[in-house]
Length: 534
Image 1 (cartoon, rainbow, N blue to C red):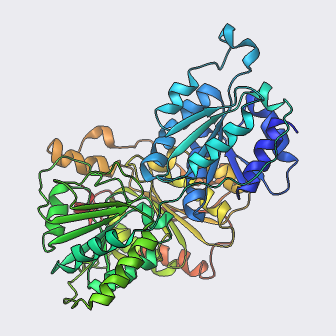
Image 2 (cartoon, one colour):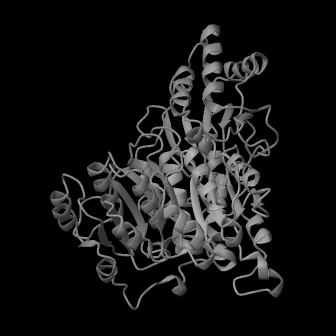
Image 3 (cartoon, rainbow, N blue to C red):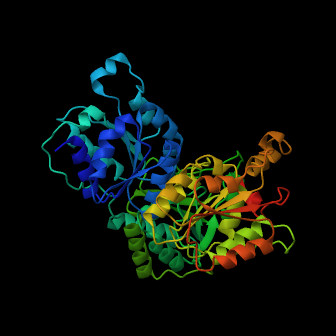
């Protein structure tokens, strides 16, 4: 069989059902071979800027490997920002990069570039199909590496001339190594660490999601009567936000983190790559600290971990819970978790906080993707979503959420998808709307239109003493209704609570077509939890 067929059949054997990509001339052999497959579907995006977050959102929303196809050096360059985001968030992603035809590489043809160096900057490993002799081995190596924790994008360079060559190798599933369970001695040490604490707390991150460990975290928290905080910028909600132990996301400010964690005398970090904060602030965490997860390179946010274990989170936490149960640890009194926040009073203008609260109330069973800037903290304040049903980009950039929602919708065709996106962010990969329309998804895209980069002005207020004119995106006022029409989406708008209620009344049974809901907001009205953003 041809190398292209071997590659696709190997992906199929490993459970891959979709490849997202923006193909060019060098990807023709791959796309042609893909069109002959029944199990595997090639999802065309109109740019790599959209294709990468589609694959990323798909992977996170389905807890599986995402696969994206990028077009040679310029296409890889277009996708690098969101490959960076996938790496920061710890998403298992395989990037199939179209190398230029090797027969005239020595002439530096159009589209030629230092693909290995470029990909190496944002991928944990780079492999290439060099000859028909190493093609099968390198396909398997790339897949195994992508499926091995700690997760991050892996690149596989696929020259089109080699894809057309014949090889004799059987496609098969790879068997990626997994973190082991804790041994008996480590289990006892970790249990003793928690048993000695009077007011312990758990801090959860992405490893909990990929290990399917949400229930194990929540069970241990109940046993300890301990809260579960989510590490800043965690890309997937690791535990249910409706659980009694859920204490919310920690703010991306070291000073505020220290204040939130001050009542606790011991901290158990479950996964993650440390605290990702935004603006510099001082703060020390003198508490005893322990960690378990996938990435052995993680360092404690202050000092050293008293105990650190590379382990499967679900198995490790259940073993620790059993050990604590045998010790009959006396549970302390449950501490208050999410602080209560009052909604702003009703008014004629549409307040962003009340709008978010209303949407969460109606679409509480939906899968949410959030890139709403300052309103993100409002979403987290009131959401009561199952583990895994709330996604953010995780890297602090913007331009991921809209396209990621399309990937999530393709991976979950029977679920309602809600994407709440700031108006500036919605412009980064708006071409993803075409892919959604082409595949008849049913996404509710909520655009918070305040005609400002409000998040940057919040930062400017702290760094520069006030808002900056450069962060205003009017005039002209962007016509999101025209954008919806361009891509064959339904469109609605609301600038008052009454108008929002009218729209929601018409959507009681869900969204039957892709719909843009533009909430036209007064830029002077800030989300009530905006101070938590930095």
